[in-house]
Image 1 (cartoon, rainbow, N blue to C red):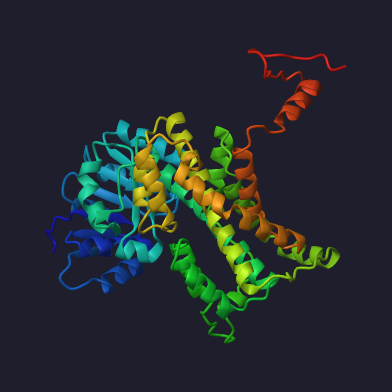
Image 2: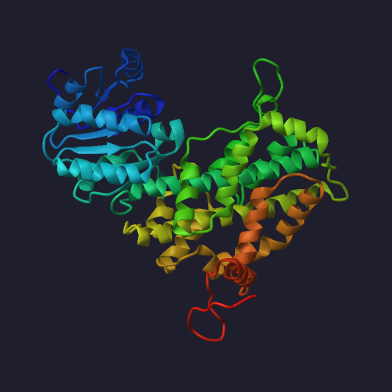
Length: 470
């Protein structure tokens, strides 16, 4: 194997990197992986499937020199400064025309900077989003490459081979210019934040509010996953309720502390939406609720000062489950709508040329937010690729209108019982505002003009006006 010329190199042999490399080897590619830690190299080589060509090394130069030209190298390292450090180590070892891929969760602005930096040195650089977790990396993730169209054909065959498949079609596509790949992945993660928050709220109402136990919740989510709510997140939630804790014998979910972590992509989505003036309140509140969950000691203190009824009564089990199902469907659709609306605007504002039909198409398999709803969105975008918001599609409108009444009932019961359903509440608020021909912001603009002479527009004539209010 000493003289073997490898097809693909990968830097970073954590679980994700290791699994992706083994996936490529399963599809007939000769691959080599690098990690500073000899232990990580040993772990890779211990998992090699007989008949595949895989090598690990702790010598970066050895990996680079063993690759076919143009070299194709992916980095799966921690976002931020570590990516820049690896690039500086790589640059002296590369040849003009080599292709470097950042497959981590880098902020899109960093990717834009790196594209130009590497281009000026004669190298290709691509930001590629990868979703699906450890299992997805091993068996087939959703892959979101962007930028450098000249480089993409050189990596397209292997990305298509290792990606998830839906109806025989690979869940990978070139998603636009510049940092489009990482921007799409960022928004994917923002939508993921939103849906996870919605699921947790429905769980809270059914469990803490209505008293369903873990076995009952398992059955509820099992039924939901066999219908219109079928998705990866509903599927794993179903299974979570049955997992026992090895230490106590209790259900594991009941001994997990209610403090959620994050890696920043949800926050980035909210921040960029704010900069672009795009409303994504379901995603925003999901980020805020994770932040609020971190204040555990304060919440415990506040719970002793402020009491609420919590328990929901006067409704049958079947009715509350039906309302919960409608509310989760409604909120999930709204979370997707907000994220896709952000992609629509960002694509134009940043000149990324993101093809929304392709985005929802490759999200159908492999990724964390895969669901049957994406088939509905794909049909909507196929019919109208320039759709600015999926809520404007008449078929989707019928889906959401048919769940509206039950969603309102569910949110009302939770609110009256003092159970926080911030995600569902703002999803409903977004829907009501988006479909409202008239909003009370005329009063806000009047206030702004009153105290700051910020001017206003009129309903009866064109122009910019200011009033002498006093």
